[in-house]
Amino acid sequence: MPATSSARLTLARIRIGEVGIGIRIEAVLQALPLPATLGRLPLRTHALLGMVEHDGMAVPVVDLARWLDVGAAPAGAVPQLLLLRDGDRTVGLRVDALEELVEVEAAALQRLHHGDDPDDVFHSAVQAGDGVLLSLLEVTRLADLALCWSTAPTAATAAAPTAPPATDTLQRTCYALLDTGHGLIGVPPAALAEVLALPALTHIGSSAWCRWHDSQLALIASTALFEVPGVDTRVAAAPLLAVLQQADLALGVPVQAVLRLEEFGPGVPSTDGVGENVIDASGVTVLLVDVTRLLARHPEAALARGDSVTATASTSTSVSPSNTEAYIVFDAAGLQALPLAAIEQIVPLDVPLSATMAWQGAAIPLIDLRGEAPDTDGADGTVLVTQGAHGLAGHVVRRVQSLIPAGAGRMFNMGANGTEFITTDDGGQQATYRIVTLTALQAAR
Image (cartoon, rainbow, N blue to C red; front, side, top):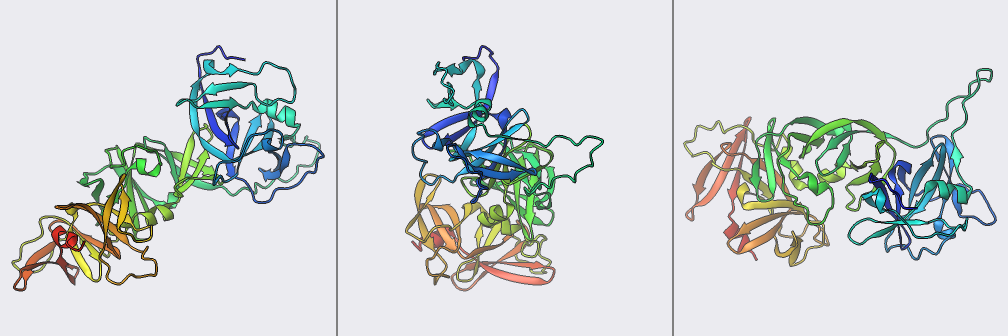
C-alpha cells in the first residue's frame, strides 16, 4: 500500500532478466559473485536454485526466473548473489545485475496490484528517476512465499556443552575506507603509503603532479575511479592526499577524509575492472580498489621511482644553465626528453595500434614513435597526449622513464644544427637526453 511518511528510502536497484527491482537497503546483507557450483536441496516444484555457505550456515538461494516470466538477462550479464535478511531470517537471491543505490521518497511507493493471490511476489512500484520504474521486492514476502530461509543456530544452554564456533568460510580482507567526495573507496592498508595534507599541485593539462619526498608524484582525480558519464576527471582540490603505493610505483588520490578500517568479503566486480563493489554495514556502496590494476593502468605511476627521478640539482661545475621547466624522459627507440608542460595526459596503449585513438570523446591522430613494434599486435606501450600547433595528437612510446624537475638538470646545445640536450647528475650517476619538440613529434605524422 502507498506509504504516508515523507521519509526517504534507500533502495538497492537490481535487475533480474528484463525486470528492474528495488530492495530496501536495510534488507541487504551483502552482494557477492554467484558461485559457479551451488549445494543442492532437491524439491519437486520450487524457486530454490540451491544453497551456499555463509557465516558458518547454509543459506538457500532463490531464483525468481523459476517462478516468473522475467524475460532474458541483459547481454553480458554476470549472475550475482544478494544475501537478504528479514529479522533473523537470511535468504539468497540470484540477480543478473546490481546496478546502483537510489534514494526515493517513501510516499512515492504505489501499490499497483490489489489482489490477495498468495503466489504473487510484487505488489508495489516506485519511480527511481529518469523515468525508471522499479518493482518493490519485500524480503518478508519473498521468504514467506519461497518457504526458504535460514536462521542462526540458537545459543547453547548453560547445561549443554559449548560447541566450537562455526568457521566463517567467506574470506574477509581489511580495507582502509576513504571518502573521496564522490563515493567511498577501500584500499588495503599495506598499499596506503601515506595520507597527508594536499600539497601545492602543478597542473599539466588534465593531469596534476606534486612533490612527494624525493620524487614527483602523479595524481589522478577521485572521479576517475567511478565510471560516471559526464563527470569531470580533472584533479580538483581536496583537504587530503592519499598516496597509493606498491613496490616502486605510486599514485596520489585527493580525498576528503579517512574514515575507518573495515573487513569485507568478495564483492561485485566494477564495470571498469579496477575493483569490486560491496555494501558496508551502514548500507553505503564501497569501491574496493585493486591497487595493482590501478597502478598498471596509469603509466605515470612509474615517475615516483626514487632511483629514476632526479631530485637534486646538478653538482656539475659546468656553466650551462639549469632547466627552468620540468621534463619527461621517455623511451622511443632511445631515451629522449620532452617538456612536461607539453603533455596533456599519459595513458596506456590498451588497444591495437590504429591511425587514431579515442580521447575525451574525440578521435585524435596516433603516432607510433617506437620504431619496430615490440610485439605482434602493437598494443604494448604508453601514449603521450600532447597539444601542439597541429592540434591534439597521441604519441606512442615504449615507456615513461623518469621526470626531471625544474632546476635538476643542465641544458646545452651540440652540433651545427643546435640540437638541445639536458644532462642530469644524481649521486654521481650522470645521464644525458636529447630534447625533442612537439614540432618534431607531430612532423612524424
